[in-house]
Image (cartoon, rainbow, N blue to C red; front, side):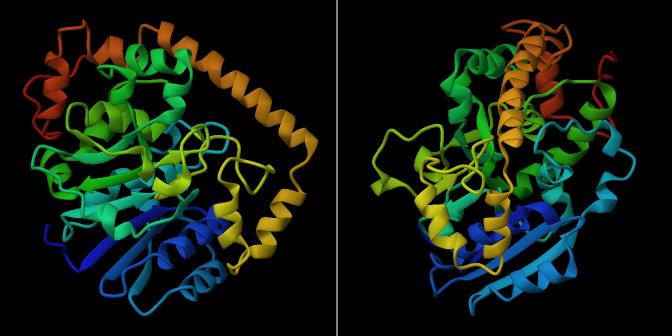
Length: 338
């Protein structure tokens, strides 16, 4: 397979998450191919000039690092965007990448709570056919519990829980996403319905990209809930959900995070975060996990979830296919209002 010399990578981040972004960024930089150029763009809306200066100082000869403020994309819709627990509005930024960067046909998106153990260029080189919108890894957290597996199938409407992907690591076919107007479809769904979600951006992406996903091996998105296999094949660790190595000791794969955390310009902030993670905050995390499970059950039972509104019956995907071919300026038929 012929490789393109340039690798386009996106993160989305706010000021609070900058220290952990720096860990992911350092791990990415140290695994790059010196014969390739890596354009890294950080989508943000409140990162301070001081933090930007520190992040830029981490760059290398074959790395370009830039920041794009996406605040204007959220004007008028921020009050409609679902959030919970540790989520911030930055989780939605990835949905606007195709429209914001019309010059790019392909990119990798990474969450900030990741650590690279291999060259991200290898992931970028994943072949995406015309019909494929994203390449991604099935969500291991969803697979870990029966309730979450039911949510993927009965709440979101995936064919089965194994086809529900995690949106924290994506190879994005930006050209194909522009053809369907990904952001436009998202905004239409957002403003037409009042869907309750567990993983807000991720649920919408799974709905919109349904049937147009290339699934990758979990070595490219190994989550801490899945610590059963040898580390020899691991290429990317994802510290998602509640148990972050900057809060808890002995999180699976914490040694990889620690390796880079001690060498970033934000080492002291990371240490302070762990020192300040009190028993009260630990208890709050536990309560949030229990509340999450209650919310999942409510959404499964709700008559207004994705599955029951968009996919009326097991074999009736007419509305879905309408969404798939949707032109947000001229629908083939109006979407039914709630």
